[in-house]
Image 1 (cartoon, one colour):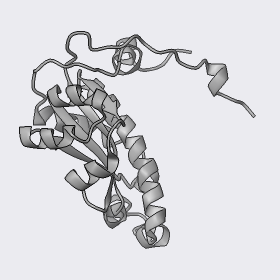
Image 2: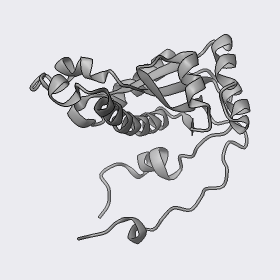
Image 3: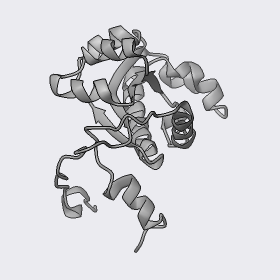
Image 4: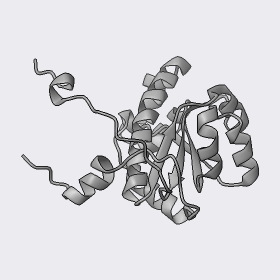
Length: 196
């Protein structure tokens, strides 16, 4: 069975897409970021809670503040990427549920009144959305360099607040010279899929 999605699009989004480690200096525009968001916002989350929050790091001053919280190996690429996004989970996402889940606005209090429940749900669903975001960056013809090698608490204190949990930092742009490491192996279908 073949997929409905055109093979060229499959390659763009998955087979040929890689984590970029270098970028050109071509800017990533606000219009491109808006187009990415306007596509990926339709990815599913539980109760349509949509807890992902995106902090764009554009200024030189903000970039310098971020780089110091990145692992040593991630600092040069974060310093030079055209755009950097801090992806975080909003632990107060439930405040938006009456608008986002209008057929059951009581979900806000019925399921998410307790902070630990919200934090767990926000983490899982924002991580789903982070995956959608990376695929959206690829759909825009750009490369993404997602990284979790960072001081999470330092990033939270520097850029966020106590209601937001950082998930990752993503460098975004057109791939530069020697952008790719060799492709790592993937698990076979039989190693991943079990039928019961």
